Length: 71
Image (tube, rainbow, N blue to C red; front, side, top):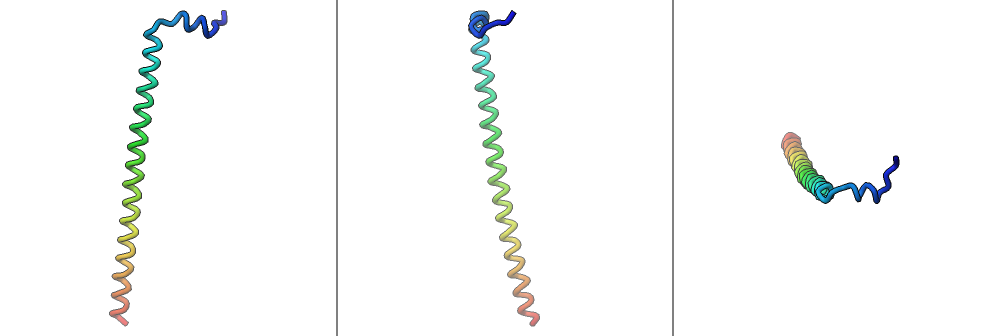
């Protein structure tokens, strides 16, 4: 027997709806937490990349100064 949506809603009690809403809110909460963590990791990664670029530039300048002193 195929149940219609009305039959399903009629057979549910109110706690099923509360459980569905609480599960939805919990999943939404976890998703927001995950996005915040990912955003923080991306910002940290960008800062590390910038630091690597600065280190590379400073090493290159140091090498250039050494080469100028040699010649």
